[in-house]
Length: 399
Image 1 (cartoon, rainbow, N blue to C red):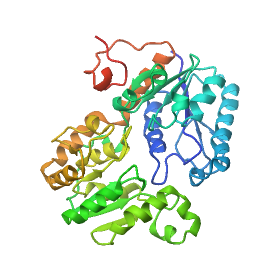
Image 2: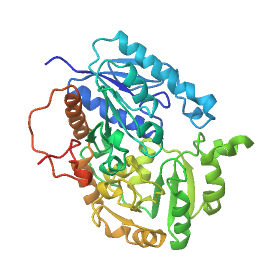
Image 3: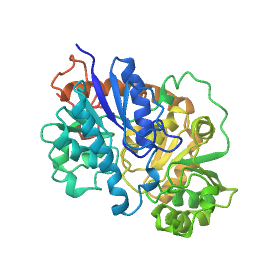
Image 4: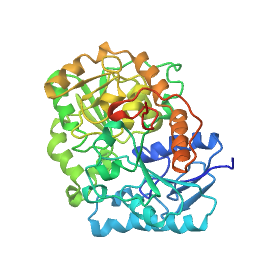
């Protein structure tokens, strides 16, 4: 069989890999090297500051456009449009491309349904309730297929979108590779909420409970475009037009005393890994139906148990009472946090090494590429079906 060439569309917002925050970009950065190890040629649609090794690049913007993402529509809409226009122009010029693997919200499937002559796999990384007018009547024209990042996400999808689904593939992290064989640092006395400061992530609840329990809490992640306290302090008065900044000022900052509860801004690389690996628990006080849970699988890979609310994909990703504890309300969350030290770091790492490696994700995506091209892979046993009748291998369960 000839070499498979995939156009991997990472979007215009952040480089690949990102410098800190960047969920989709981290997913792409983990997946692409494993695809290339399997002989896949990758053309990456990204920004000029990306450093990921690939066969070729498509670049519209020199640097990431994330700072513009929450600007008014009439100032930001053209960014994704310009990026997707260039993707389609290049796709027409490159007959060697066999599959497009798209990761650009809303604009990606719409433009590619009209402009792609090759099969498209569009990965849904977000809340599928966000675009009801689009997802409620989506028509991929026989060219665009979708996959989710959890079964619970696809279970909530509108029927029109679900009709295009080829299953789900759980998010992966390089940290999961041999996670059960690496030495782990000693645990400290802190817990962590890792991710963008946002009302959906629920940092206010974690901070409030930290004071209630007298537990140390570190909040790590950007607030809008501001990566650390110094940048936020230097921001102009119009920073409050950003909903994440308003959330911080009104709901979270009153609980941040610099001692029991601290905000350290964006952390990346070894600093992030050390912060998480030495934590007693990673907290997920989610206020929404989390679709994928990148930080969940990273936490498990670093041997840190997960404490969260029973929302979205969390029940699929953790083994209850073994790698994490879930609750239905604030009181239950507080009680679960108290019990975090009953969970085994070794069990967390072993679960990640079994379920969330980039190698496993690459195998599953290759099967989906073959499927949408009409080339079913050789028969192999499927794992037991998870919620929604979809196997954890990312293809519809049969039998």
